[in-house]
Length: 147
View 1 (spheres, helix red, strand yellow):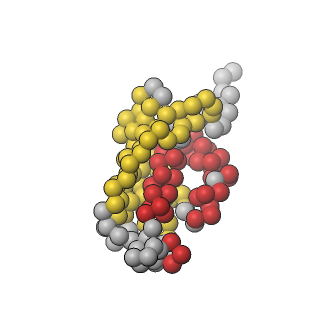
View 2: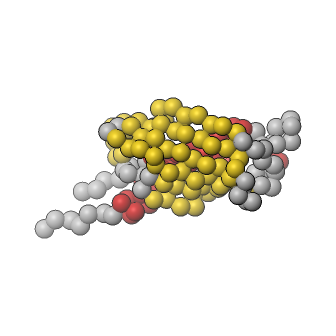
């Protein structure tokens, strides 16, 4: 008798759970995974005073880390281990301490071992903070056993 297939939604959730269990970077900064689906993810981050730069705005590295982590969860949601091949970010508006940033990733293309993902980062008012595009590459391995 054959084992029933896992749905893509359950697969994405299980992959994310496995990643979260060992993702010290996400945990240490305080990012939260809000949603996961095949090729998509939503993460959030509350900005603290120690994340501000000398201009009194959020250091771009924290915004980048949020977008990059959201990209990672989206591109690893298919149970193929994927890494970033390249990425770019455009900062549009500053963010300040106390803001709640939300990053939404969506899969634009996935062919062979390559994927393209767009991530939009907004604040609690819905104002665009940054736009990020990530290119992924799958490598050997699976996140969870399926058989």
